[in-house]
Length: 364
Ligand code: KG4
Ligand code: ZN
Image (cartoon, rainbow, N blue to C red; front, side, top):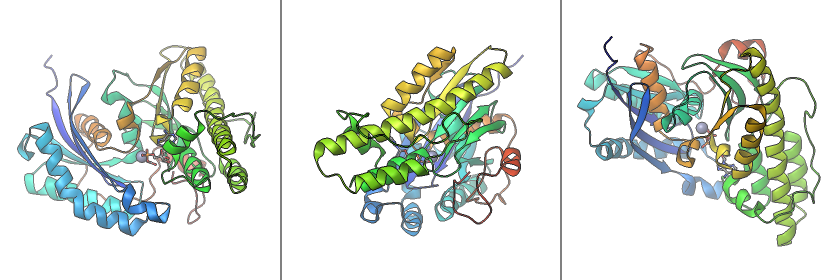
């Protein structure tokens, strides 16, 4: 049998406030990141305390060509060396998504390359496979600024949702509570630092969905309660204690709900090949990682998380999802559209929507 030929794919990511591009080569099922360039727009959004969609879209337009050129140069390649171009087509801020997707389409059209329109969440889902050999299927906790879901990942295009947030994402809770504590956006990393010497037991916080069936999440009660306390504390010790309590409460809920998913997953898989992956920006949090790692060990699951640079948004995860899709012949036409909302498991999303059409709520 002939070995499948290596595939070299450019990945473009513009769904939020990072303009990112990367080149990934997949050979014999193993990925190699040849380059990964990430331009963060944080400084542009910081004065507004959150991402401003119009500013994000304009900034993507201004930087995308330079970022893609750098990704190719740092990989030591030219467009002619690519086998495909992958771009995030959603979910996310539609103006930004359109910039990256249109740029990818233009490259694909100009150089007669296949285009792969990638779901940003699928990028996070495969991100741990950039640097580790993690066979499918695995149980995934995807936990970021816009998303919080538990999924069984059997491959690209084959994700089944086990649970998701019924209101806010965990990263959003970190950001909003951190904001109330006066921390700069995105507040997750700063809140983690503030929590370092804090006493997590000092402030009791609500424990949503405790003991409730299923593995959905809820963070809005915690967010409101903690933000209210944050408005009343100014003493440095109080601030540290509150940050520790918030981080502990988020880690605890993520762990409790993941435990339910692990038990169901283990039953479904007859206790064999139990693999667990946590990905997305909040997976960068050491307390969250440690708590999930301990749970995985207890339940007999392997534990993996991407290196920090691939936890938060990046182009490499989009390139890898694109390469895996390309290998399966899952390519898209130039008519692919940008989708602000795009659940990974569309069947589950139709049956048990986490938000009603037109309402504000979790993106997926
Ligand atoms: O995956 P990501 O870059 O973007 C989305 O797709 O949402 O995740 C960004 C989120 C932000 O909410 C940020 O505060 C959070 O990840 N985050 C963290 C940490 N690093 C990033 N949250 C807690 N602790 C961290 N160390
Ligand atoms: Zn993301």
